[in-house]
Length: 525
Image (cartoon, rainbow, N blue to C red; front, side, top):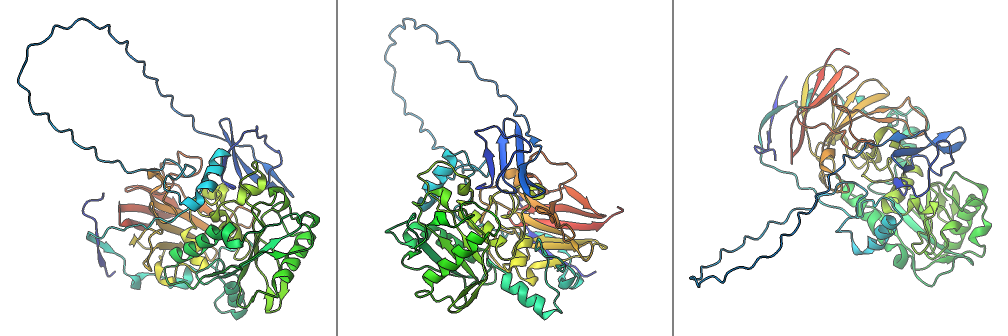
């Protein structure tokens, strides 16, 4: 086997997320959204689907904190008379060294961001006041080190053809595989649903009604969301982006009240009232909005609207416009920060907007039960999309993926998936025509800037297209040491650690600011 030399650093240097429940959560009680998490006492409960209902599961006990001994102050001694000393020569005082500032580090993903952008501060404060998780509100560029020693890597010529790793989707949900490249219709349908993606065209439709009036503009009320979506897309698009977010300069009026549309008051599945609401919204905007080339419509109402009147919806369509059929919608709840916490506030953050948008197009599913907080489709949008999900959505190209045989020994360098650039970021090992192992390098940066130190390393997970229940399809593969966190925070492999998946041993042989060097070896099952 030919070898490639590469240098490594010489000095290896909710919202549907977690909620601390104010009320006691009981197993089997009704909840609102699959994947929602609540902490009650020392137990973490997850919302699951049971039959046609959403209910709390039996719960998982949280690790018990180690008690910290409280120091006892020593008594202050009584003052005693001191004789007056004789005069002595004055010496030059030694200057006190200036302390080196300590870089701030997050201890958990829910913590407040001291550098939160001003336009998001009120949202972060609202979430924390209501004992919710503060998701990422900004992008932090990741700097990758470039001082390297010599390591032998497996050349691309020894890799498998890329289509071997692009497992083909054969069912309707979740969409975690690629279309059959020989079926032109499948390819067209897949490309039409590949949103949000690098080149998605969004059209905002802002609606006011008799029970939701306003005198403001959509840009004034939701401009920070529109900017976040555009910047998130550009920052994640390693191979270029032509994303557009088209925003009208006013709210369009509907004569009916929001409360008259049955079933739109909560997040959920399609209902007749919601379908009519979408038809009326497009009809109100159609005379003044050109819907040509639009991939997804974003519907908003004034943020002064009572939160209970409209729940977020990732579904909608098809709806006819003057320019053609519209098939994909995302509706936001009002996001009214002046009210008490309502279940509709669960989709308050921009990462949860993106989470829901994916459900409305290339539906990747929800994966909190088996992926912990890893991925935007897990854990309430606390971390960015998984590398595999970015690949499916078009943010990564084929050239950024190393398709590796499970039957030979090979070594690979992975740039952190959060770094910007069209470089190799995924190792994919096919186990069958429907299942692959995925490896990506995790570092603090991008939209994962809030990760704690124990979350850094090489994340290993499997994608299995035969698993079609809600919440299934992607699975963290923990190292042999096991996991010490309920949200799989410490799942990434550190240097010297390994995991064996169906006879394939994956280990990290070098790690640092450059990313990770991973070794793939066939072992006995």
